[in-house]
Length: 215
Image 1 (tube, helix red, strand yellow):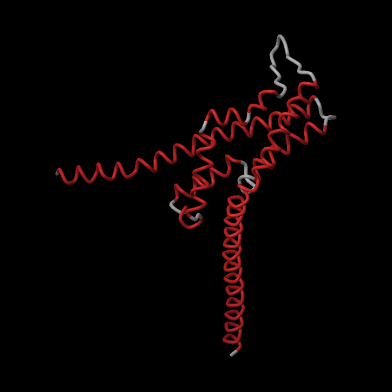
Image 2 (cartoon, helix red, strand yellow):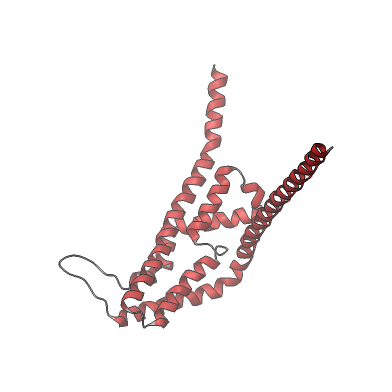
């Protein structure tokens, strides 16, 4: 009985790293989605109030594009969701090398580091905020939006300086997407080949049946 209990405890402890990693990923995903969603909200508000300021809008859109480029063309939250799904399904080892898994861990760590995250994205707090209520509404001046865009450009310049460090992980994750697409194409081709085979077989069977009737 004691041996069964010990085996259960050992197995339970073996699951803890998996649970911890999944929780860390989900938490990072939530934080990343919060940042990206804020950029989307800013874009929407600028379109509504300062649609003529294409320079400010382009800066916000470039910030969103930069975050996607860091994660193989996906939003940070979608990237983490894809990895979490692969990890949960046990297919992580099929699609990710040890270097790519280490890169994922760095992404998770980055989004879970509150002080670093707040410092990096502090420029978001400068953007116009609108408080909708029945009694009042706060309007932010266009000049404030421009100041926020200038702060965002500073963030973009820093990201461009860091770009060489991001290239390897970005390319490798795009390679994963390409490999998956090729795999899907192969499956589709196999399916089409099977359909063609069934059509030819049905035609031959019909011809054979007609010959039998004639004879």
